[in-house]
Image (cartoon, rainbow, N blue to C red; front, top):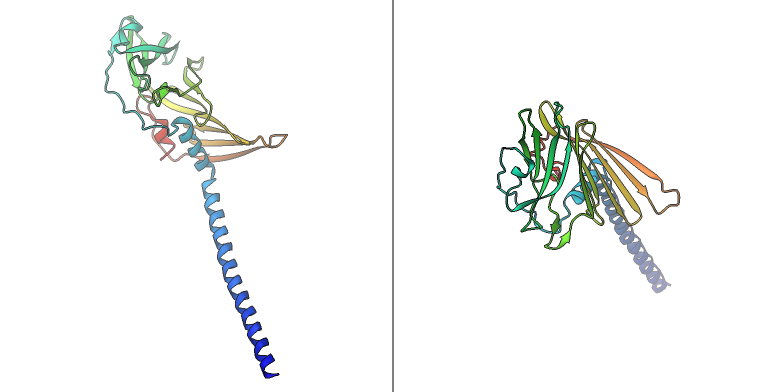
Amino acid sequence: MKKQSRIIIALLTFVLLLVIVFGYKLHWFNAGITSQQTEDSMANSPVQIATKEASETISPKTEEPKEINDTEFPENGNTIDDFVTSPYIVAMDAKGFLNNDDMEDVVLVLQNKTDSTDLRPVLVLLKQATGGYNLYATSWQAIGAAYINGDYQQYDSEDITIDKNKTLIISTYGSGPVGNRETRYCFKNGELVFTYMETYNAGAGQQTIAKYDVLAKKITVEDINTMKEDMPTKVSHGKLPPHKQYLFKEVDPVSIFSE
């Protein structure tokens, strides 16, 4: 009997040790899940979602970004052609009323004809009462390069317009990580400033639309679940931090939303 008792006690002790070890591992496993869920929740806040979408949409990381060129363009000219210096040609142009006079202004997107991957300068030319144009501003970051990696076209299509509200609108449309993007600029207090951006990206089972009201410092993100027949939409809201006016000639939308 004494031998049997010792065997029973040994078995009970072994079972008890197993229970203790299992409980210890379960505790740390659950703690790890909780920690991961917290990190996921933080990563999915509206501002961070919108920031991620903007960075991917505006500047997909396929190669090192080009450096801003130091080319200087004429400050004034009698015709549009006077501003198109070698090695550039006109890729796109838009005409309309940008500032507060009644004279038709012009915006040019130039392309380096010797390097398709070069950054494209965007020139804002203001019509003068005495005739001709003055170069108001040049942006090297408003639209980006036409091609990346040598021969890969970055956008499927592009457009630049000046609408009836005196707003400069630059639109690009692309598949994959590039997505669609629209940026808007208006004259405020005598300066052409960045006022609004909207991006669209589509992936497996989801479409995301992010709207950035730069003047109101608001972000709206719409996530559309395309896996369900009724395609439900989840809308999130966030706020941009206080900031100064973003000038057209200085602003890089990538840096704004990745800070």
